[in-house]
Length: 177
Image (cartoon, rainbow, N blue to C red; front, side):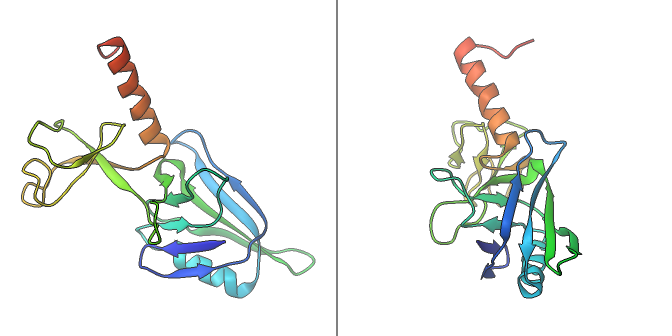
């Protein structure tokens, strides 16, 4: 697998017998575990310890974007088996998981739902969930304004839930009481 840290570091790692558990609600945790060498385990721990997350670039189901985590995904379990193999487990809050951006750089697509919805003058990129990816020159969400946004990763649990809610409102004509 290839893992990219938010600081720009990228490393090809071997994780034998990988197990990926993706939680389906924000209160649970996502986990990735497997067997590794000491060197790869140290590199993975360093890449995943940053506060700006990581992207697993080549560990995905065909036809889906690779997973990325918006925040720390530390190695929380590292142990030796009776045979001397090194096992490790990365854990992250499920609400921080999203999908990686397409392209060589990868990285997490981060956007937010503004507490005051975007108006007609907003020039930010809009997402299906109702969120925006602010651009610096937007009068409503740019650098000069410092908007209050509920940030979440694209393609994650929160984004999918918000998109479903937006679809229901568009279909039914009003928010449920």
